Structures are given as C-alpha cells and as structure tokens.
Length: 142
Length: 120
Image (cartoon, rainbow over all chains, first blue to last red):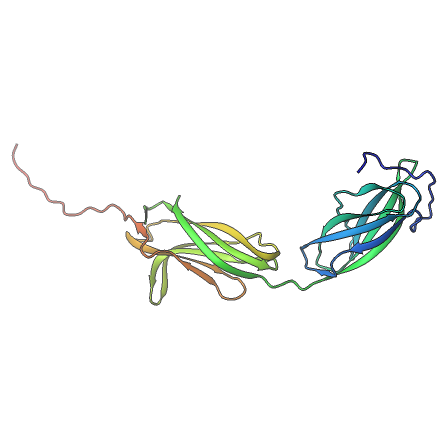
C-alpha cells in the first residue's frame, strides 16, 4: 500500500458507484450474539486510472447511531479496473443485523467521497446453552 | 498432607471448563470436613460467585480461588476436602481431595497439674 492515496481529479457528487463498485460483501448468514463476525468487502476500481479507494461499514439493527465495522486496513490505491478486498470485524449484537458496506474515492480536494453502497444481512443464530465440565482443584496453605 | 493451625487459610484453586452462552450465577463452594458413606459432612466452608463467564464458542478454562479460614469451629485432627461447582445448568460438579490430607493442629491443652511441697 502506498503512503498517500491517488486522487480523482473530477469529483462528482452523484455517488452510487460512479468510480467504484462494491462487488461482494462476504459475511456468515448467521452468527451468535457476542461472537466476532468476519466481513470481507470487495471493491472494484471502475476508472481507467489508479485511484485511492477507502472502505467503510456500519450495522443497522435498530440503534442510532449505527455502530461501525472495524477495518484495520481501510484504504488502498487501486490500479485501473482492478478489484481488491478489505477485511473487517464486528461483535454480533443480540439482534439480526444488516451490514452496510460503503466505498469512497479520494478526490483532488484531499477528501474522501462516498461512492457506492451494498448491504448484506446476518441473522442471529441460536446460542448454545451454557455447559460446564472438568472441575479440578489444588489447594495450599496461605 | 497439609498442616493447619487456627487462623490459617486454606486456598483452593479451582479450574473448570465452560462453553456456550454467557452465564451468571455459577458458584464454587469449598469445604473441609469428613467424607463418609452418606456424603460429605462439612465443618468449615466458603463460597464464591463466579463472574465473567462470557460466550465461549469452544471449551474455555476458568480459574477461581476460594479461601477457607481455619477457625475453632473445627477440632484438631485429620480431615477431607470437597469443592462443588453449583447453580449451573444440569447437575452440580463435585471434586474430592485425598482423604485425611488436611491436619488441623488443635488448640493448646493442659492437664495433670500435680504439686508437692516441702520446707526449704
């Protein structure tokens, strides 16, 4: 990954995937409350030149503001026409969620501009009841 | 074998495994007493509520300590130990220590005072 994102010289306000396209949002169909959910967002550079692309994500499940998804590496410079993916995680709440994945491009005004959005639902799986086993004990005078 | 006097503490270090949903309310109960055919006759004991049991997708080990203070509620002699994990889904889980492994040194005792006297 390069130090600085490459900017798009013409900034359009239209969004909806003018320069980028989120091609896939990968996540499990369901997850248990409290478990760590892995998310992979694949984005394509639709332009004919290298541009800086950033990923973002949020969870919709009835709370406001929407909690964000953590992406440790959240941007990269994409060669023309190339796709790349970003891995992120979130902790599953006690509700089914809708993942909103966002792509942004880096503009000549040195700002990130929203460009595309894609969603994916993750259901809440039944949590296995608590189970206990293997009690072992040692003791000593203190 | 561990020898204890009044005022000493016996620390039980207890480990168990958990998986599945987060759980609150589990308790560990440790006792010193006598194990017999009819069960365990507790003389001294202590109990602690286990906190921090989170959702675990696979078996995870938790370790908790409990101290039992040796008081005059127990006489001198050899005793047994028992720990149970209780207030959990399903049956309580028991652990028993080696028989007569705990020796309580009783309080100091005196007897047999005898006296003679003479002119000096």
